[in-house]
Image (cartoon, rainbow, N blue to C red; front, side, top):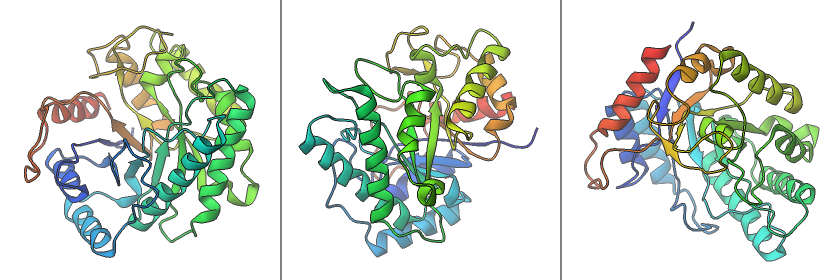
Length: 299
């Protein structure tokens, strides 16, 4: 089995360059980060040239290929919303996130589709797809070939993106000429929480991945490697360190042996040991070190 591209989402205290330095200290091959505070829409936050240059220099120093970097979109973006004002603001926020990600030259930005609220689920999927189209059309493609990717969800309440069918409907809204600039990724905790059995056997896990690939027509572009604090089908998005949750260690061994985990960022979003980090502290979080080493040992 070829080497897998493993990383995590390090603390961002002190900014993006410090996050990269913490990734380097953890010996990551991939990483995830925010380009702006994830609790705001950030429609007016731009990537400044000096920050772009410093970020790219930091990646080179860390030995992390920019194509293996994910930007995570703001949590407040609800592109599925049936409320026109909320949907429009989320659409603009996603476009700005994609603009910043493209300027930084990373591989992709991922985002949660959001909730349908009291609206029709099918129409909510269509609104998510239309938001992707809006973002792609607003941002010219560059040599970095940055993509905007939907992340599956745990399925709580009216949250969209809990199934392959919902993701496929979202992506079906994207015209063929733009389709290469988008796609999807899978979070293991979200899969498990939304009722997909990825933990009882290797065969069951493979069937889940086969289903997503067959329904959507392509493989996932990234994997979030998270255990789950809650049982199968709980619909609760609560991550645990690998081996500390209801999924357990062995299913991650199966996943790392699956050919669909090759050549894409495999990013941990598991609990970290340090509750606060000084802005000038570039050291690795001990829990991130343990998790990265554990995944590598399973390869």
